[in-house]
Image (cartoon, rainbow, N blue to C red; front, top):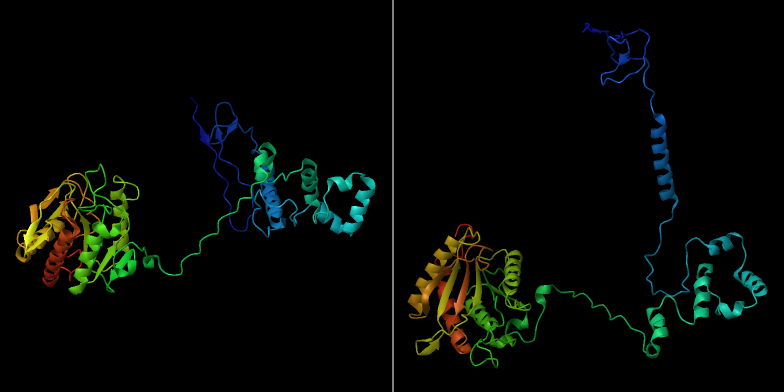
Amino acid sequence: MAKQRRIPRMIWLPGTRRQRRRPTRVAGDSGSHRDKLGRDLGGKRPPRSYGVLAMYISTLAAVGGILWATPRPKQGAVPVTAPAYAKQNGPGLGRWLASTRVSLASAEAWLRAGVPLYRLVVPQPVPASWSSWLAAGVTAAAGTRINSLQSLLGQEIPGLKGAPAPSRPPRPRSAKHHPRAATMAELPGAGHRIWAVLGRAPAIGIFQTRSTESFWPVLAAGRATATTTDWSKTVVAVGWTLARDLHQKGLMVVQSRVNNMTDGLLASDYHAYRTAEQLKRRYRTLKVLLDVNRATVNVPSVTINGQATARITLIVGTNTVLPDPTWRRDYAFAQILTADLRRIAPGILGRPAIMRVPYRYNEEVMPLDLVVQIGGPNNTLSQEMAAAGDLAAALKTVRDQGWLKTSPAQA
């Protein structure tokens, strides 16, 4: 193979005449000039395609001019059921007629003279817009409004012609107050508010996952579990008793009385999770979150100070199935709380007093988050409320010990 010889580039110096730079050429055996990609140039520089670039720029300029010249519509989209004779402001025969300075009366006279059946086709009075005359003529000839669904169906269903036109229900006015001020007449206490806030800076949050769970003697026919939507007879009332007793002992509390059972039992955990997140997000001062519940099986009551009382079991979720980085803090908090319950109300704790389960039960929302199981369906509402009072006394003792003075991350 013959040795290739590289032709040096031309160098420009200041003051010299500027010349056009040529690509590096490689002289081979064939004597033809090739660029670095090996394409045969025939000794000439390839032509530059400025035409494509110019066409691209001109297209962009044309599109920009069209967008700039197009007038912006003053109104939104017109629905299908809008009146056929609505006045149109867009381009059309009306704009052309206005540019020719021909009055509408003159145009109507021309049509009356040139079209013998003009009055039979176009209804009177004449539509204000020329672009509506076609729709008006078709409507008059067909005997029905082409843009009315009820009129079109009336041609096929004779009985529908006498039916009144459907009216859109009025849009409800937005409440001026905060959604937390919404009320429900069936809720006990706190002015029947769905979000019962007792104190300016609540430290304890209460909600109910199985919000429709009730107690004896509320028992539906053919059902082994007592449930009702009468909130004064459900665990919502038990949670309210706990919140009221805590507030009377000097603690600030918020109770969510949101119904988490609207979509059944399977979806209640998901709705309860959203409720717990709302409590955490809306009330930044929360240190403890309690899910008031009851067992699904009968739990024997206990007599404390001469009063029948339901038993209490604390449920602590772990990270066996799903991660819960704060479950050990929950377990330590449950141990402190059960120790105070044993001292305040001996015999009130169930068996076991603390139930560790492999599931989280939404206790991953924040530290010091527990499920409080009070009694079962065989207990009465008075027994449940008595247990809630003892639990409130134990929580006050925990507060006095300093658990609620620290942040959840330090607890």
